[in-house]
Amino acid sequence: MKKILVALMLAAVFALTGCSDDDENVLIMGTSADFPPFAFVADGGQGSWGQYDGIDVVIGVRVAEQMGKELVVRDAEFGGLIMDLNSGTIDFISSGMTIRPDRAEQVTFSNPYFTAMQYIAVAGGNPHNVQSVHDLAGLYVGVQMGTTGDLFVTENVEGADVIRYNRISEGFMALRGGSIDAVVLDSATVLMYVGTDGALEVVRDNQAFESEFYGLAVRHEDTELLAAINQVIADMTAAGELVGLFDHFAYLLAE
Image (tube, rainbow, N blue to C red; front, side):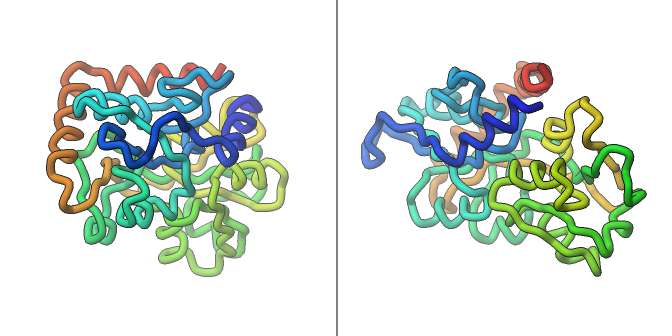
């Protein structure tokens, strides 16, 4: 678990370079590399693409191969990825992004590639006896800015003090340190951060939280790129690779 937190804090420092961004043969992927098992900084800097690894990174590599281009990974704060995409700083988003109608007004999403829902992480022993989202009222609740968890808590939990982090790794460090009471975030990533050391626990509220679906995002006009992404997702799904990658990275990060 400590290895994950140290590596993810490095994500705020490093950036993958080596190609000119204005090169026609370069495809720039935007991600927030603090979101295991989807995107994270690899231990020892030996990831699927340079220092970066995770399901989203592998998909990005396959998309670049499909289009015959060189991949560049841009690590950025999640809340700014759509702005980066539409400003032309990046070419597509591969960052565990939930397909939502409000986001679909700004970007075009690929076909879904993963199903998730929101989980609540609390300190070990659940000192505030959180059993549902309603029990978060009056507590300090950490979220990652711009995520589904941020939107849900803001819109549905009255009385919670919402603490927004650009990097959710900071939120989990705060939870472990006792300065906040809970974190609300996507299920798979919560499980990665909680780990098995007993310092944190997971609370599931299946009545409040619904299933959500991840997609890659492109600018509305980038139909060729969208077609390539959908082909990669279809091929990887048919081959069982996406399930295999999830199992692989879950095992790797648990070590």
